Image (cartoon, rainbow, N blue to C red; front, side, top):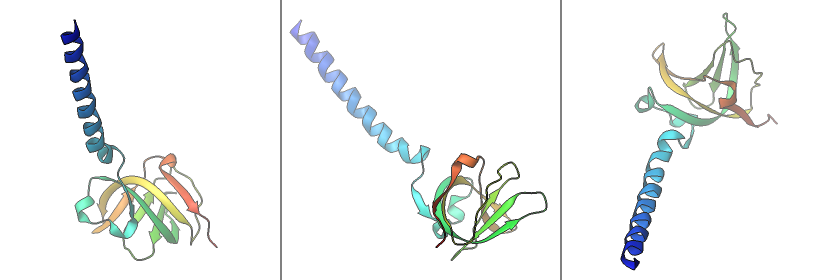
Length: 123
């Protein structure tokens, strides 16, 4: 009886350790680490990224979508027309979205309003 208990104990301990290591490995794939928007490169195309940056310009497009330009980078954030949020120049934001190529530049497309937030108001 004691042998069975020991075997089960060691087996459960080993499986627990394997599970924790697996979660540690998979976690960055599920929730990407926070990057500055200027760190985004062509290596990130078709990947989800979590970025932070300060807005330099807000452009409302003809189709009622929004494009956000940032300091120190040509990468922009695109908000489709179904995401109607008001941003101002100088606000620092964080966003989770997919990197795509648009007109030979990089663009982060936001799919849901809950994936973008203001972290610091303009001063």
